[in-house]
Amino acid sequence: MTATALRPDVAAYVADVRAHLDDLGPDVVEELTGGLAADLSDLAAESADPLVDRLGPPKAYADELRAAAQLPPPAAPGSAGGDGVARLRSSWDANIAGLRRHPRWPAVAGFAAVVRPAWWVARAFLAFGLLRRYGTSLGLAGLLLLLTLMILVSVQLGRGRWRRQRWLTPLVLLGNVLAVLLTPAALAAVLSPAGHDSYAPAPAPAFRATGLWTNGEPVSNIFAYDSSGKPLTDVQLFDGQGRPLSLDPGQFDGSVDADGRPRAFHVDAYGREVWNVFPVPTQRVTNIAGTDGTAPSTAVPLPSVPPLAAVPPSGSASVSPPTPTPTVTTTPTPRPPTPTATPRAPTLTPLTPTLTPSGPPTTR
Amino acid sequence: MDTTQLLKGVLDLAVLAVVQSEDGYGYDVVRRLRAAGMDDVGDASVYGTLRRLYAGGALTSYVVPSEAGPHRKYYGINAHGRALLDDQSKTWRGFAETMQHLLEPTGARS
Image 1 (cartoon, rainbow over the protein chains, first blue to last red):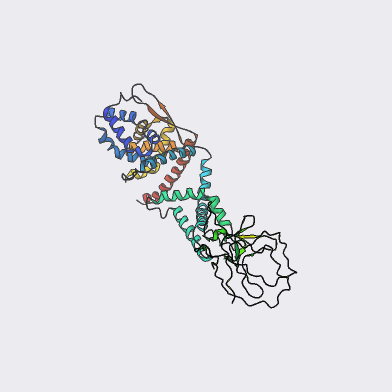
Image 2 (cartoon, one colour):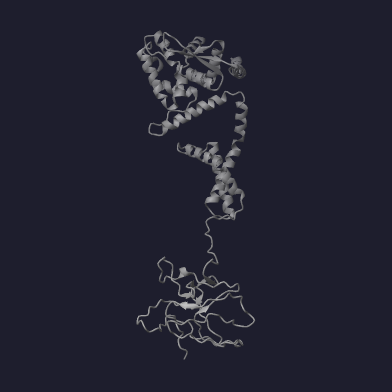
């Protein structure tokens, strides 16, 4: 377009009009004012009266152009994001205009217009589904009420009843987009059974893989008493499959070895640490005197328990408590409590106490 | 009676009729409308209507470059526009007849 032949007043007028249409985007402006310069030149050539007198101020001309072309009125001057949004909208308009030229468009548009109310209800349903999945936990009546409310809001918005405020429109548009994008998730939430409460923390497991537990409580020590009710020491415990009933070493914040592992209280003859020997001394008592081996470091909960009704006829009636010397080696082989209930126990290795053994308090 | 309100309703039809007889650019269409008796029509309204009809698919558009001055944007009618013109002129005729009948008894009494 050669601007050289344009009269300056015409050029100025056209530039002003275009400036007032700036928010519509360059494509729309070009469509509206493409031939304007030439036409106004003709107009100006007819008469000596200035263009402004004959056509009105450029802004009024621009507004009339908009109105006749059924384009949106200019955005409020305060909206900073108006430009970008308006450009988006104008390019959207241009695309839609291209679509409308298709001969099939009226049929499709008619169908869409009829189906629109169904979309309002559907989007309320989807929003409701999303809410239920990620939010509230109401009773059935509460849920129905919420759903009804959301359908109401959606339909009223769709009918344009509440679209008074400016900010509501983009919000509704965003809601529409979100509803469409999140349809799969929302459908899953609505259709799945209602027992899917992801907020309830998983209950603490009733059993753990390590350590000893009884009735859900951890066991930190075991005190064994013989048939006559006297406490036993250095009892090695195994289950029916011959597995040692070992404590979890992590329970004890006692001394640790060089690798940071808790030092076991007992060591077998091969030097292996064992954790299934009871009772476990609750304190690590260092022999202060150095020579005296007696260090009663295990407090027994019960000095004695009632004796059992029948003493099992076993070869060894009572276990003699080990002599409290530092080098004693306790009896390696456990004697079966009754001849009939012999666990399939592997060959046991003798124990080497790692500290001054705790002898039972002398039974008085 | 202010004719601008009446004009708003039929401007589409008027513009289509003008363009149908011969392709024209904006100012040309305005001149032809004025020549036909529509003095009150505004330039911008005609331009805007041309653009709207074009966007709606009733008109075609092409640019004729000019060496002596700025290019001109011409509008022409197409099949869809012709169909629209027929449809709207039928509506207009029907409406005009209705108004005529409505007004006749008043005239006949005088």
